[in-house]
Structure formats: structure tokens, C-alpha cells
Length: 391
Image (cartoon, rainbow, N blue to C red; front, side):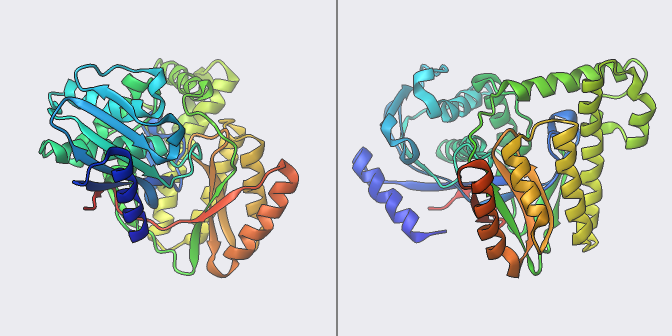
């Protein structure tokens, strides 16, 4: 935790709201190491929480007013709403996310009685696909849980955050982002079965290697129609498979079982989408096993295979992600690289030998800029704990 961030937030809070009594909370971003577009297909994912994220500094009010301010969107100024009137308002922009969480809690019988003033600051690159929206949602959940003494457990809050994004915001996201952000543990990734929410922590032993996140700097909106299109293609595939096999999700199938029934999927494109969902889920299970057996080379190989499937079968990569990943594959000291997140821009994740990291960043920055026309950004990731109260 950076002390200079804390004092900067405290000073800014006093400047904006002129209130001194404050509490500070933090919610991380996340990166998914493998298992992409499997969460809403009832498969497994393998994310971890990151050391950068979203800070919230808050002071309770005596009325029903909520005033929000983000240092990341200073031009929007202070956004206000009443706890008695919580509806989606386009003009409220980013503030709809915290509002969605407060409203969803209330729908479940957890009513926030008092308003509050809150200042946010995030050091997750916005629009990079490292889950700044889910980080904000889980942060808000932890804050109102603490503020109102609801004593809710983290998994209950995570579920409500997903519901807030699905129903209030209208983005049909799976549960992975909120789960990783809420349940993160330092030094571990989480193998999560998105069908049952069964999970286990897996120690990431990266001795001599670093996780390097590359940001394409191509912005993408998650409410992107392509995301919902992929979901509906997978639903179509599932419905057709269900005419011959008794399953509830694509994540239940092994590769062999899929090969036996794939021809009932009439559209060849829909068949490719389903193939990715099934094979990626199995790849994730193999990758975690490899990691637990200290076989980092196999883990890296499976990461790279994941990218190829996302590029060819799921078609969610695009020029920027493919360029960043193919450049990574050519670099010395890299054992695996793939896109991470929803795709169509956003980030890549690579496992790079420690002594090669600086050369990796310098060389790829130069080559990517020549090909794409603007530079990428890189972050060497540290795996951190989940959302929590700091002060």
C-alpha cells in the first residue's frame, strides 16, 4: 500500500467535500491467467487479484444523499443522487456502477439508511480489460457492508455485484471478475468452477519468472455487441447439443464428448464457438495441474494454445492483441502469452523470465509501435489480496 496514495486521497477528499472524518477501502483489478469466455459457459477460470486497483475514501452523512467524485473523471465533477431514487441515468456515467450495487443490495433486503460522500481513485488502466468496473462494484459492496454492519460474506456480495452489472447496467458478464476481486489471496490464483462456484486457491510459484501484462491501448467497451453475440452463439450450440445429450452447460463436456456430438450444431461458426468453450475449459484444468506439478513450461504452452483458440475459433482477438501476443512469442525468455479479458482490445498476459523482462518490454514497445502506430503499456504484476478496508 502506497502511503503517498493515502495522503493524496485524504487531501483531495477534504478539497472536494470539506469533510475530515474518513475511511479508506481498496479493491484490486484482476487478470485471468487462463480460461477465457468459459465463465458463462459453466466452465473453469483461473484468475488472480492484482496489486493495483480502485481506492474509495468515504464519510457518512446524516441525510439520504450520496455524493460521488472520481479523480479519474474529474471533468464530470461531483455526481449526486438520493438513496430514495436509484435508477440508471446515462448522465451519471461511471457512477451508475456504485449506484447499481447499492440498489441491488436493497433489492435483497439490505437497505443503506444513510447517505455518504465518497471519492474514488483507480490506478487500473481504464478500458484495458483488467476489470475496472468490477473492481468499483466490489469496492462499493465492501463499503456499504461495512457502513451498515450487514455482516455479509464475500461470496454473497460477489453474487450481488454480478447481478448489479447484469440487471442494472445491462452487461451480461459472468461471475469471474467480481469473484477474483472479492476472493483474491496474495501469491495465489483461484481455480473457479463458474457452474457451481466451487473454488480452490493454487499457489503461483513463479520462481525466476514474472507475469507481465501488456496493454494494447486499444479501447473497447465490454457492453460491446460482440460479447453478447458470442454468448448467444454458445447458448444456441448448447440447446442443439441438449437434443442428444443431457447437459446443463458446455463446461460439462470433455473434448471427446464434444467431438461425438458436435455435428448436431448446424451452423459451422456456432460449432467453432462451442469448440472453444469446451477445449478452453479442459485446457484450464490441464494448466492448473501443470502449475501444481511445477511444470511452468506446459502451463505456458497451454496459455499460448488458449490464444490461438480465442483467435481462430472464438474470433475475439483483433490486430492489436494478435500483434502483441505474436511479438511476445518471438521473445527470449517467454514461455507463454495470450490475450486476457473479453477481447477486441485490452490486455495480454505473458510469463517472462525475470532477466528478460526489460528487454521484452523495450523490444515489443518498439516493434508494436511500428506496426500499430501507437505504443503499448506494460505492467509487471504482483498478485494481491482481494477487496478490503484499509483505514
